[in-house]
Amino acid sequence: MKAYVARQPIFNKKKRVKAYELLFRDGILNSFPDTNGEQATSKLLSDSFMTIGIEQIAGGKKAFINFTEELLLRKIPTMFPSEKIVVEVLEDVEPHQGVVEACQEMVEGGYEIALDDFVYRPSLEVLLPLTTVVKIDFQALPIDEIKIYVEKLAKFPVKFLAEKVETYEEFQTALATGFDYFQGYFFSKPQILSERDISPSRLNLLRIMAEVNKEDFSFEDLEKLIRRDVSISYKLLRYINSAYFRRLKEISSIKQAIILLGEMGIRRFLSLISMSRLASDKPDELIRTSIIRARLCEQLGKVSPKQVDISELFTLGLFSLIDAILDNHMKNIMENLPLSEGIKSALIERKGLLAPYLELAKAYEAGLWEKVVNLAEELGISDEKIPEYYLDAVTWADSYATL
Image (tube, rainbow, N blue to C red; front, side, top):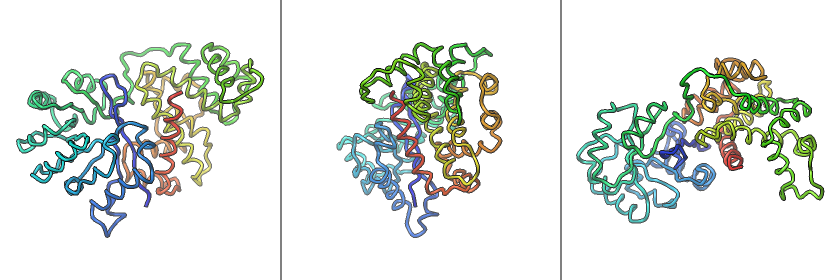
């Protein structure tokens, strides 16, 4: 049984990633019929830290991890480095003396405690002096009640994390209410204030990305697109002449640089440079998520028995959040790009041959495990291999997103 582990970003007030919450496969007892929940969770934790590697899955950030009452009493969190994890106490944990003593010992050992899905009850006050982060579900409680909680807990040394923040309006409300951290998919939604055209400079970047990710793109056409952008031209030549390539003779031609990097190299380089420029005023996680989806869709296409163009799948994943990056409607953006009808249909209508691959990638990142299994079966892909493909995509994206 492979460990199903995905990650969900936790942002600070500046929309920069503070940490990741690790999402484990639920329904784990179906795969481990002879073990209890604590044993199954312990195995998943072991897989995440020892087999997968916390550095890979959390990208060097802290990992928020849910622990049951039994795992807290057995002090399972202390098996892992205090600088790598935040111990999430689940909402159904009763704060009796044993739990409080276990949390006290962990805090003294340098661990941070978070209370998950917090709903106030007097018995929880014994844990609040030990708590660093209080997580409040923005979808489960009315805003007036949330404000009361924030005011009531102001006497404790806690930071507030708004969970399930799905829109920028909710983000702004949480920010104004006094929240410090934010979790949810608001960052992947466009802020459409009014209909507006895509600027020529951005349109050129989009066309470069579309062109470079075609299976049989034209080097000549690509060269013309790049030459229109001085910044990309400069970065490309600087990159190809860097110490990494150790060339005796300097490369001074865009065409030479394209040929030397080759199809895959130029695709990766230009996609990242173009995407980072398009999303310069957006959370970095938008770029990372786009790249993870691109890589994961490509990997899924390679192992699917269905006849599908993997370069189109890479492009599909890469452009899947372009509406949020440009704050525009997906349909409007697609009208301006030379992408295939298959890609456009998948992005606009979620239909067609390519659509299930993107839906599978999105389901995995959201921890919708039952949907993952069903889509994998539909595509003829072994669901046990998907965690491996996801980890590869996360590692690949994290390394390129720093360029």
